[in-house]
Length: 247
Image 1: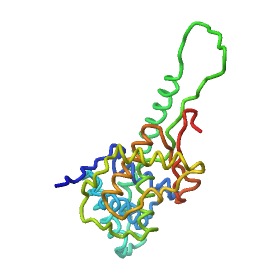
Image 2: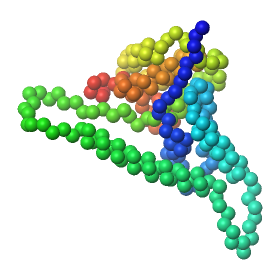
Image 3: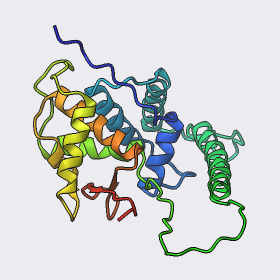
Image 4: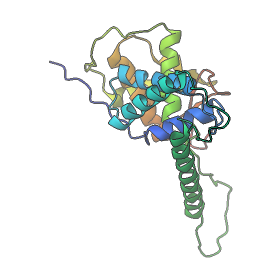
């Protein structure tokens, strides 16, 4: 009997990271968060992860419940307050807003430290040497797309292909390993000089095919063998082959 896939991704940093990603993506004012909109977008991500039976940490589900509670609270009719009443009505979004601002501050500080570390890793000292030829290769970055961008692209692919529910009821091993699918994907991308549309890598509406392909793309990105790019937010994603010089 085929054993089900156990899918766990390492790119998730927590629900605050996902919320911050959504705020940046939709250019939302962090001091005036539209709870209904952010809740709908957040739940879309959770539903996409659940459809793939990804290992979702409980903190994501706790945040989902918090957002739904906030949404309900914001929909309740506001009590009229007399002008003489000096009681301060706290915005129910206040706590979430403060948590996000604090998280963003530490995330930006961590990014600056990471950039400094990356720059330091490119500095070497050695005795003077004469170069006979110019074969100096520059380091290649892994791109700006995060795991959330990839999940968003996957969710939009479901909608475009009208795959509201994959045909299989559970993820079963189809006989193709992630390593084999990586080879297949790489071969397809190599022959697409202008980039291969993300959707074209998902040919069959079965969870096994979708999950193995998705994991294969993530592994290829991690190994710096392919890069995923989109011209603007919400545009179609394209997968490009990365040669040694990053072209």
